[in-house]
Length: 171
Image (cartoon, rainbow, N blue to C red; front, top):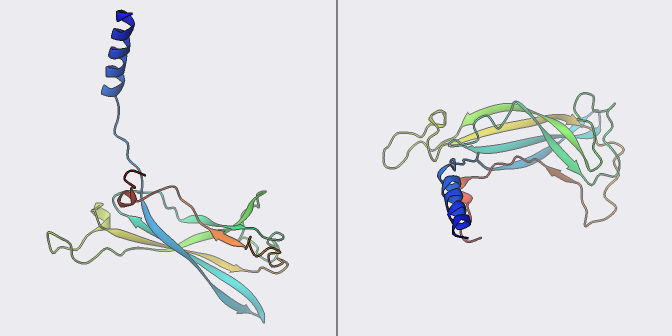
């Protein structure tokens, strides 16, 4: 019995001594907006997705292209009317192609304890980068309004990266 306990003790010491440090990438948040665009008397839509990146992490996690997911549609966006603007639909959603149109360091111009501006390129804590993505002009013709007010059409963008300042203690 003592030899089993000794082996377990040595094994646990070995495992805990070889644990590597884990790090995560971080996004601060974002917003999805749209505007109506009148094209030849037909209402169409242009979507903008803005993502704010914490410059201490998430390096390279935002690409030049991405996708805006569309959920709970009655029908499928017409690929003929939206040539080159859509990804192939899945069983649960359809997605609209996004292209990054700008990437800008929007860090505060002053920082404590120095008066030097923060710099995202240096990965400084508190520095923030803004990424703006846009879609082409999307035609929703043929998509019926939701039949149930409790399941409206939803637009989502996702990335698995959480800001370290959002850690929940005791949660």
